[in-house]
Amino acid sequence: MNTYHFLLGNTPKFSVAEIIAVSRATRVTMLQSEVATMDLPSDEDAIALLEKLGGTIKIMRELAVFEKPTDDDIITIATKTLTRESLKDKIAFGVSEIGRDHLPVFDARSIKTHLKKMNYTAQFKEGPRGGVPTALLLHKANVQEIVLIGSNTGTVIGKTVAVQNIDAWTEVDRGKPYFDAKKGMLPPKVARMMLNWGLGSFEPTEKPVLYDPFCGSGTILLEAIALGHTKLIGSDLDPASTRGTKENIAWYAGVKEANIIPEIKTGDVTKVTPSKKIDLIVTEPFLGKPKPNIAKVPYIFKGLEKLYKGAFKHWTTILADKATIVIVMPTITAEQKSGKSYTYSMEKFIDSLSNMGYTTSSEPIEYSRSQAVVRRTLYKLEYNKQDNTK
Image (cartoon, rainbow, N blue to C red; front, side, top):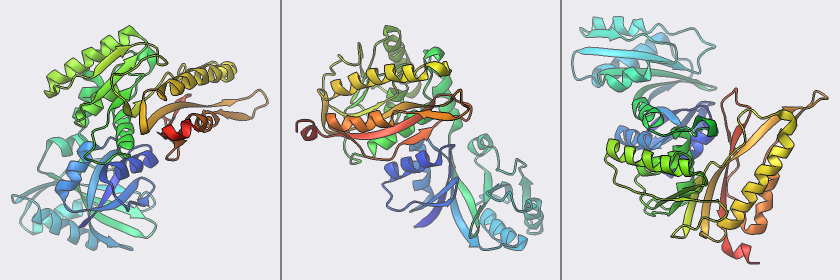
């Protein structure tokens, strides 16, 4: 087994939850705030894992650990790795430093100088201190990246072995024919993370029936298809959304050669009855306007709570026992006239769902962009039929 370090996305807590759910790892530790660590058998396993994840930017294999590495230590490890893992006598490389802002910048050109002394043709790829641009690592197979990761106990020297395929994510995000910006758009990476988090409740060999009752443009369904799931159902109140979802699925089938056709229904979330019992719901319902009138926030939340309560009540009639629900709920922090701020969330509402047989199976996770007024809070629940009949 080798030790690998995962550079996490902008919500590390969610990224780690996804890694655990997909890898079934019993031990994932935090090297520092944006880097998680776990053991894997090989680079091939790391590459395969990253292809499934939405919340990890890249994976790096650990080469050595030093409390206080000298420049010579770094040069020695780097040159040994670059020469061993290069197929030719021409080496192209870059250097990334993560969590070392408090230290002087390492002079990466010293590695190039050392390689030249060893009679290698060396090409140093300049980039920001955070590393070689992902696009370069993705498109230039011969470019290697040495990584220096700072932590409370020292510095890890590593090598990047897998990077997120930004081209594939961009294609799904921007290439699909239908979208509705007015309704808010769930990023494909977040949809993938939500799915993986939910699927972590099932054995890898299980094929749960998955339902998105607020399917919008079909982002969650598309990501489920990408993961190889076939038992898929979606619905939405808006006929334009269900038509758009079908359009997007047809487009995706053409681009990815994926012949999976989900069951798509148009109707009220409190009335739609899928053809099969549902094992897993993954969804982002209507969260209200992205920039609401702050004075009206209490009333907005009352209206949303009514919508959500009706949905959860109806779902008790369509869910299988022990079903899992991953759902986004809104959170808003508003400043009062007194100058004090107050946070509106659905936490109490989620707690009240125990009366219907729903219990939270993980801590909620907040996911949002820094400038967002309405923040996404993700909840994971389990539905237990026998609790509902007590």
